[in-house]
Image (cartoon, rainbow, N blue to C red; front, side, top):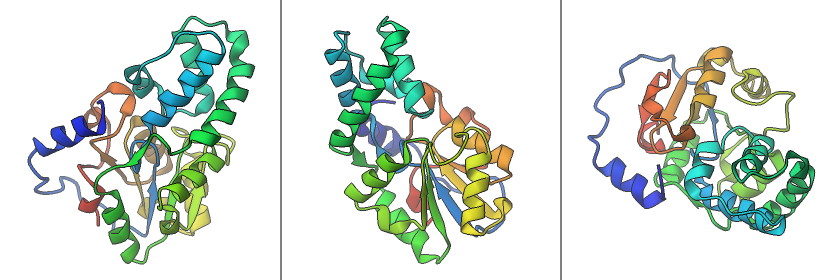
Length: 237
């Protein structure tokens, strides 16, 4: 959708949510996505990818391309970026190595927590229910980003895209996370920003709530099959 300021302007033009259309079972746990839901990390991705491309002698990519591409893991992001600039697929291994190195250093430096996230997490935490951060981002990057942004203390578990055999939109990460939290999927709410989160939740049997300000591959999130749509995590809290 663009820069955070654009998202904020778009959100302010909408009327506040008046009622939830669909009744959901009371939550016993919250599973929350990271990129596009808690933190606007597009700046990190753009910065790191362009560092890698410059070192490989390739042209840069813009924020609009990255926004359409994130959310399906680092491998997909790097392969898609190489294809976008017309680079040979054989460069993947070297691009991967450089990406890991640069991302570790830049993680969080060009990103910011979305408005309402901190207050929303405090409100959810006050309910006394278990919470997990569940993302397709590599686990070590996810945990470090949460730490650098002061969000790590809210979660009982943090799982990344390399913690399980498969990633969202496969239901396996959600099922394994529910198992780790000790809660049934039917009462474990998945909160995310994209069709990846919704498809995984549907397949796992979890209620799904999507934020309107995220990425979702450039498609309006309200076209996605979800139980509720919110403008801020504060609405849940």
